[in-house]
Image (tube, one colour):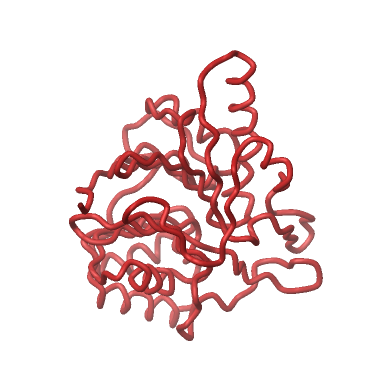
Length: 278
């Protein structure tokens, strides 16, 4: 399994890419090509081009949740596919995978929309769409996690904006889990459901408690000290081989996690490789 960070809040040291407050990564797993999230703009396309990553032959485009820093790159991606069609260049229609709530509108304070700007109907003209609350196995050992149960008492309980008149708990939040020789590689966008809930769900879906790596946003931005303490304790118990916390994870949270587990440098330009489980 090969993985490349295309968009993050920071760039990897001594690599000449650009960053933005968003997240996107590309992975290849047993011949399956997948893009996870699209960031805030067309930056994922620009960085992919610099890395030599071909986004014209994707099998899947997985969206973690509806928010602007993960979905607003969808419109530039549609333009990218359309321009290839106009020029007679080869491309593959990917299958978009996500929770049914990824197209929900969301407002926050005085900002009228922080959710997805492009409709499901529009996207269906350019790609196949599969929406599910249940986990889906996209390839042998590669899982979309579906709606993540919020079972512990300290995560996924604070609204982020509103959907109409209702507080938005980002119930559509999801992620990926992959079986590798070293254990599970778990990928999150922002982990609004809670990073500990996400990992526990991934273990249940995959039937494996070994964790090789956890990569993505952990939704730890100035967290309550009690929440951070319980999160660090959870990570210490599961003892992952590595942790690549980024995007919506603040420095203090990374420092606290690093006291318990192997927190690694991460940013745009980072590439990782793991042995695929047979």
